Structure formats: C-alpha cells, structure tokens
Amino acid sequence: MPESLLQLWQAVVARENIWWQLGTAAYIVLLAFLVRGLFICFIFRIILRMAEKTKTAFDEAILLAFENPIKRLILVIGFYIALLSLPLGPAVDAVMDNIFRSLIIVFIVAGFYNLVGGDAYHKLSKKLSVEKTVAGFATKALRFIIIALAVAIIAQEWDYDVNGFIAGLGLGGLAVALAAKDALANIFGGVVILLDKPFEVGDWISSPSVEGTVEEMGFRSTRVRNFENAQVIVPNASMANDPITNWTRMQKRRISFHLGVTYDTARQKLQVCIDRIKTMLEEHPEVHPDAIFVRFDQFNDSSLDIFIYFYTRTTVWADHLAVKEEINFKILAILETEGVSVAFPSQSVYFENRLEVSENPGESVNSPAEGSQEKK
Image 1 (cartoon, rainbow, N blue to C red):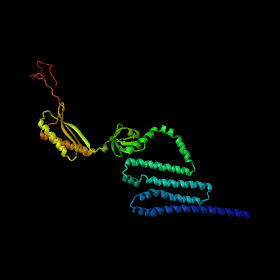
Image 2 (cartoon, rainbow, N blue to C red):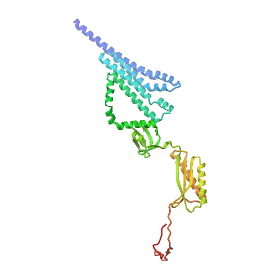
Image 3 (tube, rainbow, N blue to C red):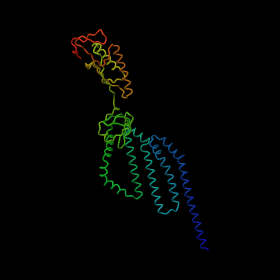
Image 4 (cartoon, rainbow, N blue to C red):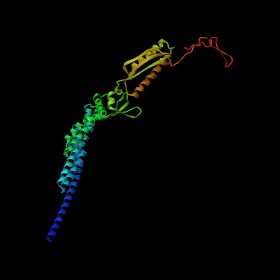
C-alpha cells in the first residue's frame, strides 16, 4: 500500500512538472511577442530617428534592410528558449540548435539581400556614376553570391561536406560547360555589353536582329520594346556580336532632301530662292550651325533640283518633326514670294506633223504622215 501511494505521488509530481514546464514555455513565447511589439513601436523608431540625424543615409538604409529580419529573429529566439525549457531530450536539442543557427544565418542573409538593391544602393550607384544596366546586373550578381554563400554555410552547419560538393562541381564542370555553351556564351556576351556599354536601359537602338527601346538587360538576354509595342528578347551573344546603332546618343538629327522646281524658273529667281533658304536655315534657332548646305544640285527629268541638307539641334523625334514642319512651311513661303513653282513628275508629247481635227464629231483625220509620231 505505501508503495502504491508513492508511485501515485511521483506521477502527480511529474505531471505537475510537465504543466509547469509547458506554462513556462508559453510565458517565454508570449514575452517574445511583447518584446517584438516593444521593438517595433519604440526601440526601432528611436534608433531610426537617431540615424536620420546623421549626415550619411547608409546607416538608415542598413536599419531598414534589417528591420523585418530582426522582428522575425526575436520570435525565433523566444521559441528556441521556450523549446529548451521542455524536456525533449539531447537529440531533439541538437536538432533545434542546428535549426536555430540556420535561421540566424537566413535572417542575416535576408538583411544583406534587402540592402543590395535598396535605396542606398541606388544612391551609391548614382554617386559613382554607374549606369542603370551595370547597377542592375551587379545587383543580381551580388544577390546570387549572397544566397550561394548562405547555402554553403547552412550546409556546413548540418555537417555536409561542402568541399566534396565543390570538388564534384569541378569534375562535372567540363560536361556542364559543353552542355550549356550557348547559355555561357550569352552570359559572357552580357558581361561584354556591360563593359563596352554600347547602350543602356531606355536607349533607342537598332541592329540586324531588332530595333526599339531597351527595357531590361539580364544574364542571358536583352529585352527590347519594338515600335509595334511588342517585346523582343534577344540573346546577349547575338547583341554582343551584331553591329548596334544607338540612335539615342545622336548629338544632332539630320534632315536631307531634294526640292524640285519647274524648268521655266529663271536663273536669277532660282539663285534668290537658294540664298533665302540658306539664310533662313542659318538664322533658325533650332538648326545646328555645323553643316548647312543649300545647292543647285542637278537637272532632273522634270525639275531643277535644289539639295537641302542640315541638322536639328533636338534629337527627340516629336520635336524634330515639329522643326522640320516649320522649315517646310517657310520654304513654301519663300517659293510663293518669288513666284517659283514646285515641280511634279510630268511628260510632254510632241508630234512631228500637225494633227487635223474633223468637223464631224467622232471622225478624225490623220495627217499625211500618219504613224510618224515621236514621243520625247
């Protein structure tokens, strides 16, 4: 009887210990939520205000990048301590240790992942005069390196042989290179484009394969929006090997055409029109003064051709067209003032003998030399 009472008492004590341990664990988790809320409402805001008062914005960017990882880390620490307070055994405790260390690595990596590509990163790129394309490519490369390092460190935490894995990659590197030679060619083509900088995002380019506005440049391909508003994806290897014309980098935009006037235009009037058109172009504020040519160029089949060649200062297409239209109207005004007509394609037919017309309708009388008409 006493032995039975002793066993019953031990069972009650053991059960009370379990409930006590579970209550302690729940209290620790609740405390972690309270600390997290306190951190969000007070501590982080105070630190952020102190960082805003400094001269540099980099410390503020670091705080914002690590804000969410720190919030999650507080909860993970609370759950970890709560689980340690429970009698789960050495094996479970060892697994929890590995999970806890892995999560810490994940949160740290998440902070650096947010930092790369954030506002401070873009401001630093602008300060160093790094182009958008290069900055975007560097962002993707740095984030890939951060994730790769995190995977390697976590694998070591779980006692995986990372060195053997890397050695295996080295042995299979040749096979992978042969199988993915096109993909590697595109990646190296992207690196060549970044180093050579033939264009950047937003530029209007043309090549044998595509013409349009560059939207994005990735590891494998460049995305171009053509003038039909369709997106064209061009492999970087092709872009690196093809000749590329970057129209956005024009310093001025050309206008060149022939103006044909009729053959009955007097020589003096033709010379006056040429001089007045040239003077108008030289005095126009939107015409670039470097190369202005207005010359009597050639005797065409049905016109006397004036060659007009000049550049507009603006390279924006809409503004360029507006300047061209204004100049065309001024040329028309000069021709109207001088009484000169613009020629149009025409053809004159001459007959060697005079044609006779019959007095009866519908009846024609041919000349004696019928059929000897000549077309000139």
